[in-house]
Length: 420
Image (cartoon, rainbow, N blue to C red; front, side, top):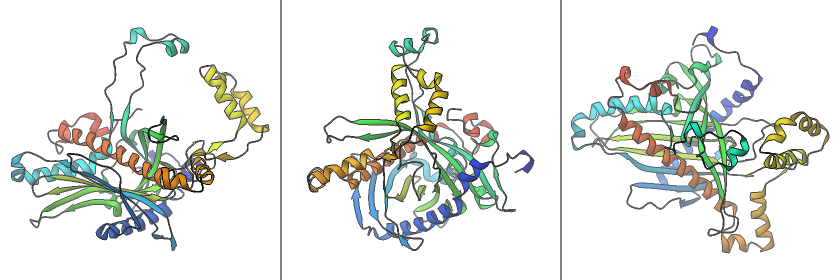
């Protein structure tokens, strides 16, 4: 990395990377605990997350409390296993070629191609609405790309040779480094991942009642390190030929000015890790195994008791967003003098109130409990990564030769599969 071309770190950058060492150490310790637990399956509380019919696919969740930094740390997590690909009958004849291609695909290009855009209805540009009111009333399809999966952007790095901490130039942010460079060039890299089509779903009146779905633009910061990368080849003739993949530590960013209404979920975990490992068998079959462990929730949402903020939000509804746009100085001035009253968590608040009023029967009879919500979060996590795996399979099969870099599409090389 040429230091002269590296952007200087600012205060916001330093805030983001401040907890790298702590979060990385937590993730490494937690992953070691999880790997040992997977051998025995003796979790404190283990349960099924999904039921799958006619497919080799399983998702198992758990609650437990491992020791982390010398203290019990309540965690929840899940292990997801599925068939990724089963090649043609003659796969054993070209197994070494498959192995070399798949190693390149996973370690060099997987982070480039893990997001995808859903097909959408064509909107004729000649019929574009002239104003916001016309657009509100028009039957014309809305031009809002439906992105799915995960969009990775590399932001910061620490060099092995010098210990220098730097920032990737904007021109290199989407072209994620080859993960094998974490064994030679980089001590760690920090990545921001955008989680597309992330929706919090909540049915306060029961499973058959109306559903509240809150679509959120969620992102989180991750840490990649050599001890979290899988690059293993087994030439001894056994059933398992190779394991390629990655794990990453979840990076906590302590920002008191965070305007997000969520207090838990992507971008809000205290600690945790995610594992995505592909296993190549001697038959040519490829299996996918994913693991995920994070701290359990103390709060789900943080709705600010802020009269100015809510007044302008209501005004924006009736003015099609014009109130904040035209009266921003007034809003800023009022925010300085009108007091705020903290925040509330309506989700866990609802759970607590329901159980207080029913002396605990809401949890026992109706399953209105924090545990049920956490299982829902694990299912949504499973669902997101299942869709990512399916789209990744389509991309893996799309390219004839992943080792032929000269003929790879530009979007694979540069990683620009996400909106710019």
